[in-house]
Image 1 (cartoon, helix red, strand yellow):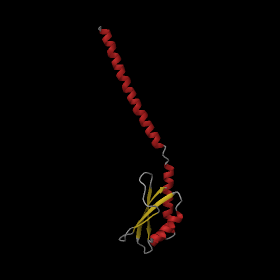
Image 2 (cartoon, helix red, strand yellow):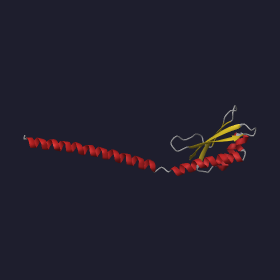
Image 3 (cartoon, helix red, strand yellow):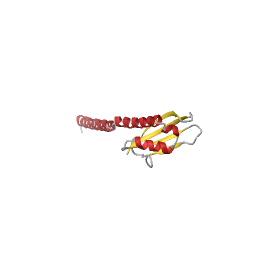
Image 4 (cartoon, one colour):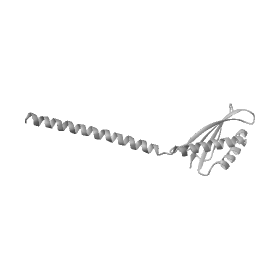
Length: 139
């Protein structure tokens, strides 16, 4: 084999490796682009809307006095009347040394979908400071 022929094979081998590296980099870039495009297609505005619904419902429960009564029955009745039909919600209330209260509109909180959450501070009827936390999700 002559020197020029061996040099040509060496160039061809390096060109092949260069092309392989370029294809791998292109594949990684395309994979990253598809991942971020799919992740960006999730609608954050609908998630924000769900959180605002939960916050508004908790504010209404507070202004109507249902939260301050610390009665699971009153809170449950008001919650079911205010909650849109396509949403489920869980409310937990903690007041100082008292036992925490829990009100839910469904059996369990789902694990495979978006769950909005928030908290609201309010005063009970005996002027004890309380914290109401909520979780809200689509059915």
